[in-house]
Length: 303
Image 1 (cartoon, rainbow, N blue to C red):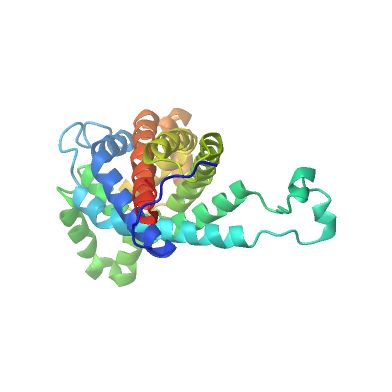
Image 2: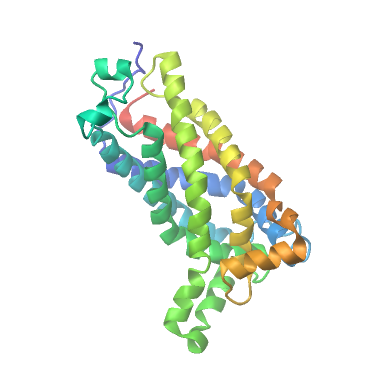
């Protein structure tokens, strides 16, 4: 087998690699593609595209994105890589009866796995998204209100929420900042459960094809782009629901909001912004997973 060329880079722990590579990838992708995210948010706004700002001020709210992107992505990858490693180490057949269902070739090689790698990746990525949403949801609430021209900028949107403390109390402010938490989780978990097994599976195929131990950053980016586009298209209805909840003047549950949109605007409303979302996440997948792979390869000494 032809391995990637090692370098004399200092040894860095897996935790630190995931932390630093994730933070780098998150900041890179959010800064690069922020204008497309703004247009997508305005297309999904209930007030309409042009009343929400149209093509003006497409970097509105970028401050909150900068604050949340690095820690959010770092938290995701630390959780993802950690749980993926634990699940991989735990692979073993639980009893002889189940071993009988294993592939004969796998048994001969001693690779008696009772849980497949895609399932591991789905579980690890889902846990990573739940962890990352602790940072992502508040920054999304602030960012999208600035993007939709409800406030002139990120700081103004944050001050507006915090100023409601006298009216709704500290707990109310906390709930306001985490508005859309449930629907964000319901959107992100299915998205990630589609994207990451696809990405990891295609990376495995590429490594087998080339005989290398790691894919390059460019290869990872191309594969991540395709996986992201598929996942983005399939989860657009959940994204529409999440955006409407975060932009609503008053808190509203996802169930009644779904019924309201379906009755008043029709099912097509749930596909609003699909094009920009697929474009943004496809490009984002290339930048995010490409830059993550570049940082990861650099730290493990693969050139």
